[in-house]
Image (cartoon, rainbow, N blue to C red; front, side, top):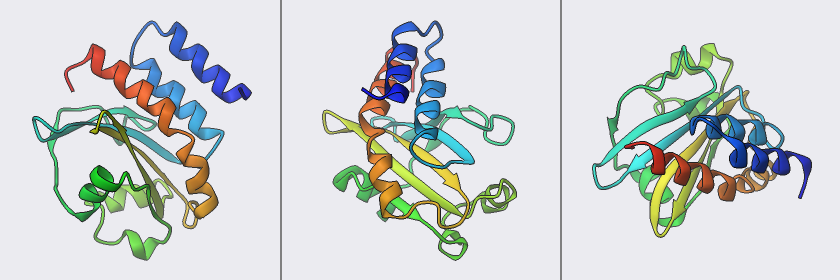
Length: 163
């Protein structure tokens, strides 16, 4: 096991606040992919709601209440195909994010969304944003290594919080 994965595992074994698990996943992700903005979004399909459960920028992207799920093609692809989705250009991000002005203020013109599933249930997503061109195919391959650690994080968070 590599040192970053071992550090992640140690964080999960020793957390005192379940919210620390999001930070541990962020630290692990930083060794694999670039991300100026990193968030985790929990999904509750039964309630048709999403909730941000971790944010690298809590002032700009706080952990607030729930929002309704938008059942668009992107969401369906995550849910049915478990597709990791990357947008690598500023132009590609146009019309995809209601908060694009804030995203760009953070220096982000590319995005990566990684669906996390267990038992055929979409638990949540890892959302990483960075400079334009940050998520070519090799970055997507590295990002896939976060799926199993993220599954553990989302299951821990579900066991402690109403998501």
